[in-house]
Image (cartoon, rainbow, N blue to C red):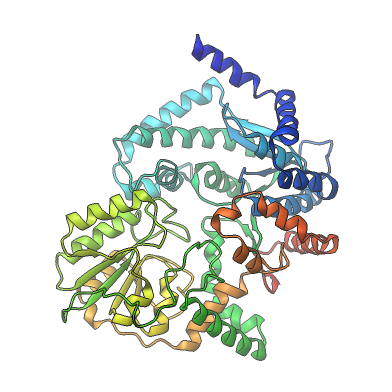
Length: 534
């Protein structure tokens, strides 16, 4: 009886008039003044028009205040260009929180599409799920798994790690089976929905995971433009991994779009910024809350390494649960498999192996890393209070990462950094970039032969291109760097962001932002960087 009542209540709450009433009540009686003022600001200044047609601009639900501000401006322009109404979506009878719904309504995103299947589709989901469970026997097979040419396995893999906090795939886990089932629900629903031709664009925060990435892949199939707008960059994606495809273009862009004097100024700026980073600044790291470097004196430096003559190898670990295939397909299925591979190599070599975690790791990360330390006796886990300043002061010979920013930092000191994935430095010979697992193994087994002589001008060029050239500091805010420096990670998820935006709001600045967005959309180009559409 209780289960039935819950079902009835959940169904009632999905009715649009009821949802609208709840949103009004929430804004009036339960939200803070910062949220109320932002909502009213949107209704007054940025609501998209309504159109009497079936055209749709589809956008995901991504309740991060700075992203919502960007969405509201970008969607207004996109909606006007395509003469289309804005809609978002949600799985089945899942609830959308009143604060989220209210925020989206404020820029005229009033339609909520629910991913629901008919009986025939539900039957197909069951059949496809069983077939996948039967056919896929390895992690690599899952990553490569396609249905009618659509790569569905990668999003299953990434979603399983992220949403269920799993370090790697467990083929016997019921949650793995649930992820497959959800994948086919999304696949069948959106394949039919997008095939009708009403969706004119898809605006999304990430091009990975089932509820976003899989829709992106289907949108590519139907030639629907996929946009990834944020407060420092705009991207148009037309195929898998487009959002990072520009890394290989950095050397050409640097020379072709910057004058000689601009190139010289760029290198000077990059040198200053990188030196500041190495002293503990996070100015150029949009999402880091804690620096891995520190300003220290000789008395505070810590003893880090054993006193041996063996090569010192530092492994800069990644978060096991967070998007291993961020830029492209890695050499390994995930970070767990990468670290396990290194553990096996450690047992074949006579090196001193050290593991360093990020300064602010998740608790689950500790558990996984400690498991590896127990499994592979050659591994030594450094204390969290050990900084890179401590490590560099004592000296390290080699650094291993998949695609981390440590490749910029340690290259400055002419220390070989060996990457196992496509990354922002891939076009520059400032790191070692393994081409295959066999290549990686050979490099590691004979690591003492690895030498590098970093050309500082290329390091600064690489740094500038990734940290300044593609970063449009004044796209939405007067300065996004000023904004993030005053809003550490926890504040960036609060309504204080709305207050900051309102306090700095100028109509002419908003119009300038929207003009840039419109210029980018109409250009048909892949990226809007500091130089405009490129």
